[in-house]
Length: 107
Image (cartoon, rainbow, N blue to C red; front, side, top):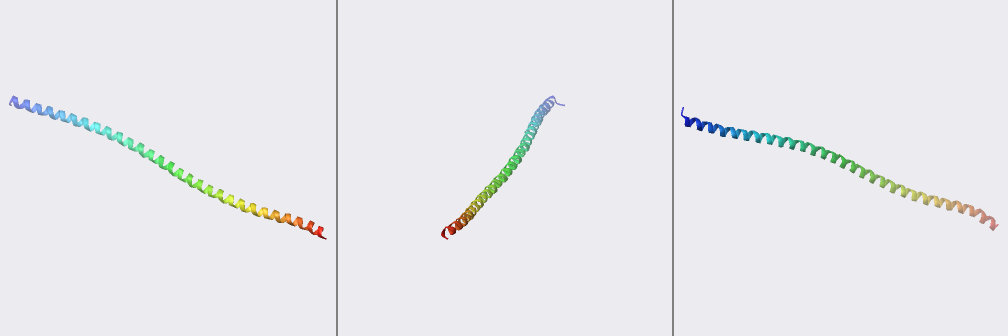
C-alpha cells in the first residue's frame, strides 16, 4: 500500500472524527437547551394556570361585590319606603289622639 495514500486516509479520518466530535457536542448542547426550554415551558404554564385561577376568582369576587352593592341599594330603598309608611302611620295615630281632645273641647 502506498504510504502517501495511508497518510491521506488518516487525515480524512481525523477530519471526520473532528466533525463527529463537533456534531456530538452540538447535539448535547441542543438537548440541554431543549430540556431547559421544556422546564421553562412547564413553569410558564403553571404560572399561567395560577394567574387564570386568580383572575377567575377576582371576577367572581367582583360579581359578588356587585350583587352585594345592588342588595344594599335595594335595602336602602326598602328602608326609605318603610320609614315613609311608618311616619305616615305615626302621623295618623297622632291625629287620632288629637281628634278626641279637639272633639271634647268643642262640646
